[in-house]
Image (cartoon, rainbow, N blue to C red):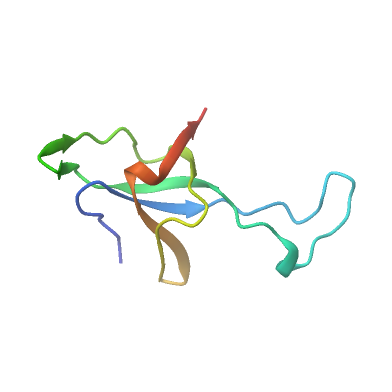
Amino acid sequence: MTLRPLGDRVVIKKVEAEETTKSGIVLPGAAKEKPQIAEVIAVGPGGFQNGVEVKMELKVGDKVIFSKYSGNEVKVDGIEYTILKQEDVLAIVE
């Protein structure tokens, strides 16, 4: 099954957080911070919001930083994805 976002939505897959600190301390699952860096898996066609055209600035494969509590998490074929609006993406990591 594939995901095809509608409008100005983007499908991302979170990059796994480090499991050890820089000093070598292993973090248990509960202590890990929720990752905010992800890879763009699919991009919607864009659309109109309040009568203004929304142009998609992201493309598949981009690494992005997104708002911490944004989007909706879904599980497809055992893989977790997040679907969010393009405006919830803060930056592209280059």
